[in-house]
Amino acid sequence: MKLAKTRHVLTSESVSEGHPDKVCDQISDAILDACLAQDSESRVACEILATTNLIVISGEVTTAATVEWEKIARQVVRDIGYNDASAGFTADDAKVFLCLHKQSKDISLGVTAATSQSREQGAGDQGMMYGYACSETKALMPAPIFYAHKIMEKLAELRHADPVKYGFLRPDAKSQVSFVYEDGKPVTIENIVVSHQHTPDMRPGQLEELVRRVVADVIPAKFRHDQIKYYINPTGRFVIGGPDGDTGLTGRKIIVDSYGGVGRHGGGSFSGKDPSKVDRSAAYMARYVAKNVVAAGLAERCELQVSYAIGVAKPLSLFVDTFGTGKIADAVIADFLLNGDMFDFRPAEIIKALDLKHPSGWSYRQTAAYGHFGRSCFPWEKTDKAQALPAAISEYLNGKNAKAGKTAKAGKTAKASGQGKKA
Image (cartoon, rainbow, N blue to C red; front, side):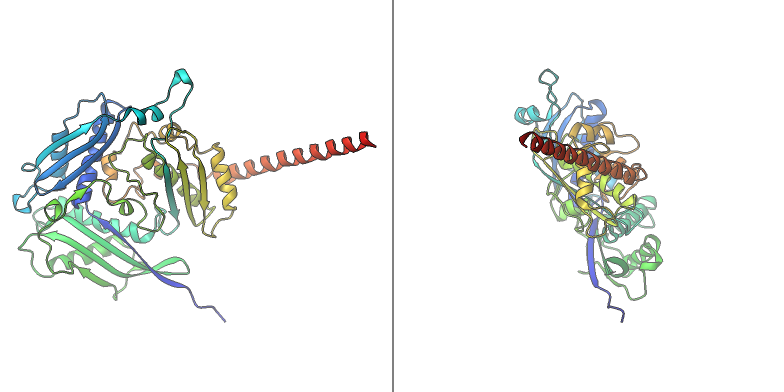
């Protein structure tokens, strides 16, 4: 008799570029881009607060770059689409307050490499970072967060591309997608939620018609069906939004930024931080490694945790969990990774491997909306090690076994020799 399939429903959300927290993330990362463009050694920890016609730029920045802080902030807000005074928050009308100071010398002491003392660059803070990948989508991302992002991206694309036809859309929005899983694999969609800020004159049903078209465009037919439950602006009205409706802060959407609640998160935000901060760079590296493990066919799901102490270069621990889908023991993969032959988790080596100080073909600002993972433009999304990874792990394991065999043989010989002398 065939056993009944296990079944559960898993939900993730995304938010648009006009969400108050995402406005702040994008300003933070636009400032980081400006600093690195002129001074690749910039130390940046920039956090933004945005509320009704007010932007506060705060944090710790040490840089040789000449940065037009206010101009950058206004341009980001303008690009997002907050240009209508009736929305309560606009690029031209918002007041901008600057509250910045330099990075603490105590932190710099642990992060800056010291050639005279032969000390390599240490981690910018203590903590644990996670990376995750799975075979549910071509991007090796969990299906709920991947398609929640796709809905938001498409609605923003339409709003920007045809501001006349889609003029009823304002920048602030959220999506939520619930997938039915059977035996651990996504099979169909249970429901979709979209809350989108709009103008007062939007006609009834206009948004739902658009959302249904977008869903048909961005979500594969195998997941769609006529019985999907749609919840479009469930309160019935969403005119007041953006920073006028809800104060925004940098770093408050870390689950949206990562895996939608499927993979774990160490708790540190990404945006506004230069790559010396392992909250960001090590999380990118962990995703890079996890994605290569799955792309190599070594597992269907892979989560990786790495931990650090401030000022210490080598990670304190590295843990791998393939949730029972691995073809090689998790402990073997972790041991291979910690050895550092193929993937080096020291901060300076992460920065070098992913070229995090010199973004080319991408920007940190791009990461600040629609997820830091699952988009091919970012270097940590490469699967360039996947083909060589299985053989490298096998060679490493054979080398360890051979070394252990020699040690054991030498021990037996020494023991036998000792017994002979005693006799």
